[in-house]
Image 1 (cartoon, helix red, strand yellow):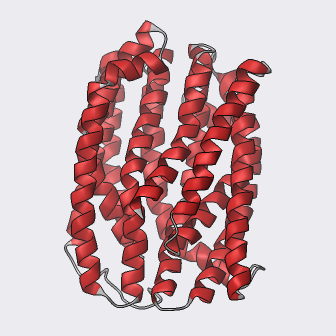
Image 2: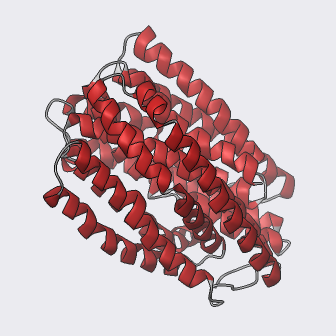
Amino acid sequence: MAVPALGALVAEPLFLLADSAIVARLGTLPLAGLGIAGAALTTAVSVFVFLAYGTTASVARRLGAGDTKGALSQGVDGMWLALGLGSVVAVGLWLGSGPVVDLLGVSEAARPYALTYLHWSLPGLPGMLVVLAATGVLRGLQDTRTPLVVAAAGAVLNAVLNLLLVHGVGWGIAGSAVGTATTQVLMAVALAAVVARGVVRTGARVRPHPVGVLRNALDGVPLLVRTVTLRVAALLTTFVAAAQGDAGIAAHQVANTLWTTTALALDALAIAAQALVGRSLGAGDVAGVRATIRRMVQWGVAVGVVLGLVLGLASPLVAGFFAPEAEVRSYLTAAVVVLAVCLPAAGWVFVLDGVLIGAGDGRYLAGAGVATLACYVPAALAVLWLAPTGRAGLVWLWIAFAGLYTLARLVTLVRRERQDAWMVTGADTR
């Protein structure tokens, strides 16, 4: 389950990596604009990641309890919720796009590029959220291969469209946004069609059930809080990086995308843990849950070590590929080394996060998210106020984000995992 989930998870960040590599050829200012707009767009999508994670856990529980029809009906409600939320958020971001990019600390020179990318990306936002929900349904049904096929095809299509529209047609950074938005909508249609076949086969509901949609929304609130704390930390990091100058924010954009890519690769194991833990708890198999945790943690740390070694050793090559200008390349090389050292701990964090999500332990994760954010904010502000600006400031920022913040999350997750209160069995956590 983890191997195809890995491919699907890595394929999604490849969208931004492809955008970064293609837009970088336009210059530092367009890349800086992409960094700001990408942070805003990623936040708008990732705060609703409960559409995938919560759906995976609830569908897996019902599957473990033998209720496949109920599992699909609950998944369909989640997809309708995703479509509605995506439409509302897209309109809100369009109306508030100026203040949003200003809040993230965009420079006056890079601001037009950030606004252009954000505006042209927003039509694809509902599709992005439907992709999350549909992927969660399929993972809960223990199918991680279909999301892999769709995500891989989407990554290829996105790269082709970006090259064609940015450099072929000459639309610049707007072409990159249009290519990505188009790809996301097509991916949503493809995944929804697969879920619809299962619905027809089992006789599950196609239309949204008001109570089911509301329950999906309410169950997602704790995970929403947890995700908001993660995004606040990421946005604060982007804000502090912007204070390092255009070269600093440009390097941070690539480094942050690399961190997201490698961290989500580790999250492939967490996705498998979500589905397996949810199904085992639904079937009442507590021993199976403990065995899953032990094995997943071992794999998470080991994969983190391997990825860290590869990325650390290849940091000069990576920086040269994504940053043609010497100043940005110097900044990026240093940041990549720091994040590479922190990847083993991140592997442990992602696995335990997935275990508790699979168990439906959202309330604890919400509280832990607030606590860890409270630890990180003073460290990030200390970098902003006390560290020298430029390359050194960016390095200290990544030590605080990838090092201190990850360690704080690890402490809270290990503490909870070693208890038994979160292991509620049956088809429902209520």
